[in-house]
Image (cartoon, rainbow, N blue to C red; front, side, top):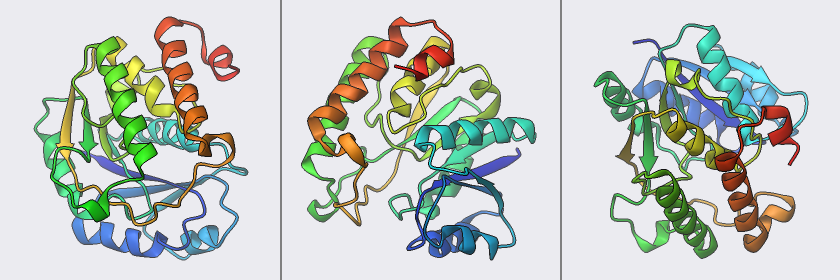
Length: 241
């Protein structure tokens, strides 16, 4: 089973070396870092690491675009599975062997991390607005797609590459998961969840722009979800909305 670990990053100089080092403690799988136009020392750090592959966006193109590029890269290079994880220490590399074992069981197409299947301490709880939005959006997704998710926004996932090739994904920003779940359900992909630890080292991290406003963020997520749910238009039209 040929597996790729794909990590989207944007200005992650604070965590990058440590996360890459910890990944190597837990797996010898290939690593791809998608640098989404970082303006800090991230590019220099990446150039100093010899055992990874790098895709660099000339400008910030969005979290969703980084994942779309990771799926495309994994398909073009013959990988069977691609595991996506963040680089801000909210996803523990120690969990990678569990994702790899779950993928090897060969009974799912998407293995999605869930931060809400384990008991968490109060200090690890996310900001209230993020927890409430996640809960509400997860309920909307489950009700409309007949799924049984507990955590619709976790970016720590294992994806069967052949299954990702069936999905036309267009959403380039943080609302990517909303379109992703619609397309996965429409393609009748098999979905399972894997419990992971909920970690919030920096509750003050922000999305940027209007998305920092919780009300606007919720409206945006709902708009993307229902647009994807009710539209069969091509990506160019979807992305323009």
